[in-house]
Amino acid sequence: MRVTLAHPRELGAPELSRWRALQEGHAAFDNPFLSPEFTITVGELRDMVRVAVLYDGPDIVGFFPFERHPMGIGKPVAAGLTDAQGLVHAKDLEIDPRRLIKQCGLSVFEFDHLVAGQPMISGRHERHPSPIIDLREGHGPYTEYLREHSSKTYKTTLAKSRKLQRDIGPIRHEYATTDPAPLHTLLGWKTDQYRRTGRTDRFAHQWIVELVERLLATQTEGFAGVLDMIYVNDLPMAGHFGLRTRTTLAGWFPAYDTQYAKYSPGLIHHLAMAEQAAGAGIQVIDMGRGEKEYKEKLKNGEFQVAEGRVATIGAASAVHWLVRVPVRKTRATVLANPLLHKTADRALKTFGRLRTALQS
Image 1 (cartoon, rainbow, N blue to C red):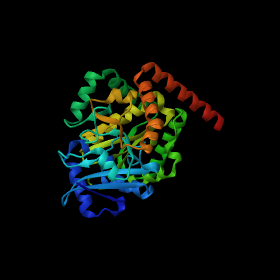
Image 2 (spheres, one colour):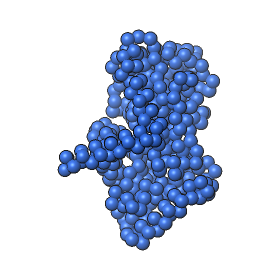
Image 3 (tube, one colour):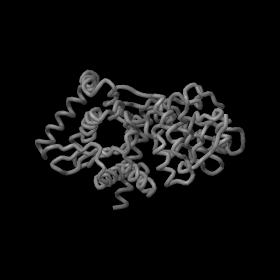
């Protein structure tokens, strides 16, 4: 096997066509974060993005997008933002993961959302569920599933939607709008949410804001940014920005105006989005790894993603292990223990309230 490295902008039409064909040939790769358009757009904003092109003789058999950080540390493209990561490759491809990352000039490749079917996954890597809304049988069967398995949530959300319209006004839904104005409204809500809950504000980084703007402007048959907004009495109430392939919508940035919190605007929005997405040909909404209450209430299936690293032998990989692995294991322990998780979440929210008060 031969490996060549390229910046995403250096890939030509034949390479991109082959990437898309390999992606469409394996169900596990049907996620927009694994699409060439996503890697190309991130590469326009982050110069450390590279793509390893894998050849078997004259044939391209895989694409491995990654970021190269100092000391040869490799990370997925837009690490920390993406819910699907990995190598897009031909079926039954056999590779030595350590040899691959060495050919990429890396000492380590770390990941936290590596999709199924990856030659890089081994028995020592941790697996985590990634909840989905499965619409492959249609929107009707999905709502029947909710009535049976999440009846209280479904009925309560519909009742709150009716009350919202009685109290304030009619609801209007705009699915897949390309207007940038509501996008910035949504990002403002998301920033408030990050600060309120003690999390890092991703949109304090200008490159992430510009990335989202560029992805919204990308509209093709096989890949697009999808902005979905709910209005009440013609005022924005809740929304979501994600990415899609032809059949998969990846959940990314959901948020709502907190003045409507008592009506459960996030759940109202997700139910409406599922209906519109199904009508637009979406078969799966991948809500991404993470134990969020709304995901548990809305899911009717799940994928599996892996977390861990592939490393060569050397000083850089040893230092990386000392810095990263104990922290990751501690985080996993906290998330797996309901009491520890609740305590940590409460501490973050307290920090968020204090930070907001000091900034005010």
